[in-house]
Length: 213
Ligand SMILES: Cc1cc2nc3c(=O)[nH]c(=O)nc-3n(C[C@H](O)[C@H](O)[C@H](O)COP(=O)(O)OP(=O)(O)OC[C@H]3O[C@@H](n4cnc5c(N)ncnc54)[C@H](O)[C@@H]3O)c2cc1C
Image 1 (tube, protein in one colour):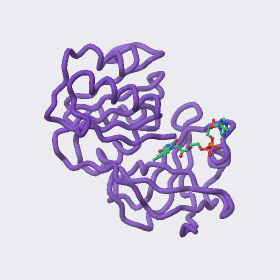
Image 2 (tube, protein in one colour):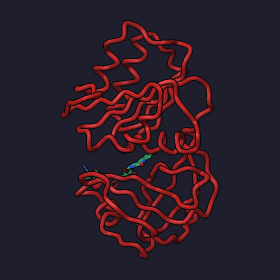
Image 3 (tube, protein in one colour):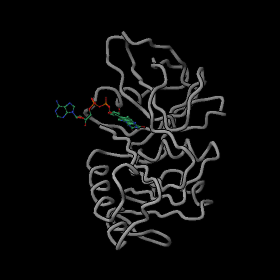
């Protein structure tokens, strides 16, 4: 049986339609990119979430999407400050080794990259994908990066690549082989991008993935 720790919600707010951030006091150390399990009751199996804050922060932030027919996220989205959740120990190996890399994330899959970024780590390029500009979470903070590509599949505007990030990557005849590529998002996105990278010459061993399933 997994060890669960009870923590009190200290912040709870929506940052976009059906997307929330919850915070609670940090009671453990972690490496940016790692995950924890969360549940509302001992009898319900925890769901996994990337930590979306810096290891130096006093609190842990979790960025999540409401799945209306899901088990946990409808409960999480209705919580208030002062309510309790149960968390597992920190786990996961999707951590950044500071070697030259592209970070590629869609939707809430940007969370581990925000944790890395908040702790001072930087990619050579960040490619963020979302449906609309409102779903480009942490856009203001990421604007300080020298090479930040924002792709919106259902939106356009200044500085926005108005298509899926796979279309952005398709444009490259070949891609640098001497970089690591970190991918985080849905299974469909990760598989599509991984296949695309391989077709552009990227060695399989340079692709590091975190799949939200
Ligand atoms: C490593 C990892 C990290 C993750 N990090 C994050 C994160 O940072 N943020 C985030 O938002 N999510 C993250 N996830 C996803 C997260 O763990 C949950 O899967 C997600 O929040 C949904 O949980 P839920 O209990 O609300 O939905 P679930 O009950 O798990 O259901 C998910 C979806 O599947 C559908 N479904 C459920 N059962 C069935 C069935 N039998 N047949 C067909 N459809 C079904 C539901 O309708 C719902 O839409 C991560 C996942 C992994 C593996």
